[in-house]
Length: 203
Image: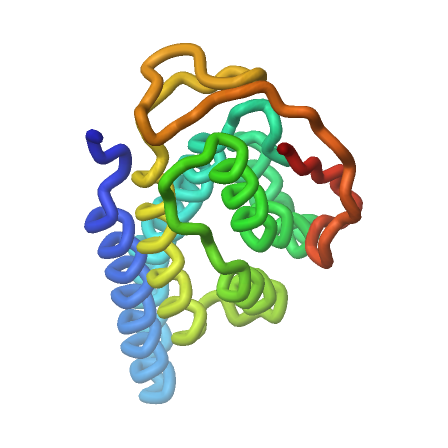
């Protein structure tokens, strides 16, 4: 199976972007305490470049992870997952839909198509969402957690076989590890991070 996303690119881009940005901010603080305000401002402006780059790469990964499970049953589309994260204040709610809820949707996708793929544990996704809401998006624990999750998300995407998904199963490029069939939906109770979503289970 051909690799669909490069784990090396996403992990190193996110790690490098945020790490370099943090180092430049530290340098700016050094000049600030030395009463060299003009130089400190310049360093802060330079720090924005790698930080914005890392953020863009992370948003791109969020788009790709939701795009990978669009078989008609995902709770959000890739565009809304990323776009609503850019809305001030509303993103404190939406981050739980776009990130914390992804493992459940991915695991349901794996079950529906009976894929030979390792399921995702939700705990770190929830933790990253909570760090974001707590205003610790630039902290060291958040950066480390973001890199770990980027690696796991890339593995999860690459574990999905190359195939064309439609609402009632696999139509083209069927992979031997995928066994499409008709599914009868039934409503189950929302989980703690479903926020009223009508999550469906399939047998």
